[in-house]
Length: 265
Image (cartoon, rainbow, N blue to C red; front, side, top):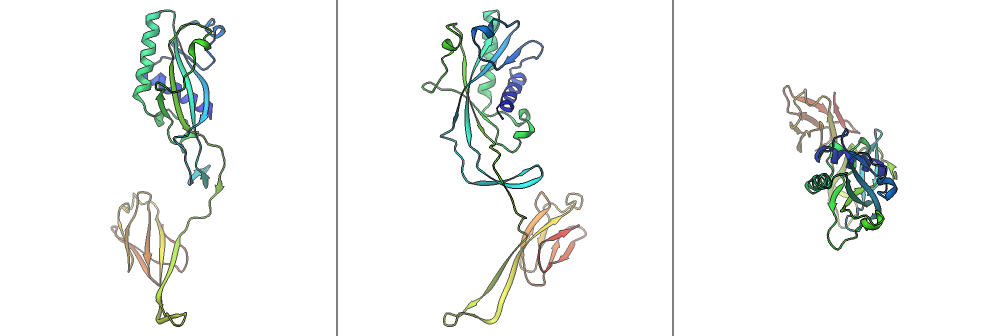
C-alpha cells in the first residue's frame, strides 16, 4: 500500500512540475550525507518520516464494494496521515530554487492526487488528500536529518485510506420486499374486512438497456411507476398478479413472478 502511494505521488510530480525521467531523478531514501554524496544529477527527494492515524478524518460504518468480482461488506477504512519532507538537490543554487518552486506549485495546486495517477489497487479508495504542513504543526527537523547541511524542505501531509483487507462476503441482493396491508381489529387480534392487500417491491433489470432505449424509460405497474436507471435496473411496487411495462418502443411487458425479481432479456 505504501509503495503504491509513493508511486502515485511520484507520478503526480513528474506530470505536473514537470520532471523528465531522463533529466531528474526521484528518490525516497533518507537524504543523509552518505546518500547525497552519491548524486550525479538533479534529484527530488521525497522522504516519508512519520505515519499516524488521522484524528480529523476518521470514518465509521460499513460499505459495500466489489473485490475480485464479489460483492463484500467492509468496515470503514482507517485514514492515515503520511508525512513527507520534499527537498531538491542540484549542483547549482539557482536550479535548486527553480526546482523547489516547481514542486511547490504542483503541491499547492492539487488538493488530492487525481485518479489518473492512482493504481488499480486503489480504485475503490478515496483519492489521497495532499496538504503542505502549516505553521505550528509537526515538522521534520530537516537540518538534523541532513546532518547539519542547510537546505529548505517542503513538509507535505498526505492523508489516505488504508485497505486492511478485512471484509465479509455479502449475501445475494434483495429482489422483492413483500408487505401486507389490512385493518386490524382493536378487540380481536386478527385481520377483518375483505382480507389483506398484499403488495411487493420488485427489483428488475433490462439487459442491453442502452441499445433498447430503456435508460431513463418509465416503468409502470398497476399501483406504481419508476424509471430505469443508468445501469438498466429499477425497483417499484406491484400488486398481486400484476404486470410490469417499460415504456420503450416497442414496450417491454412481463408478468410479475410469484417470487424473485424480473429480468427483461
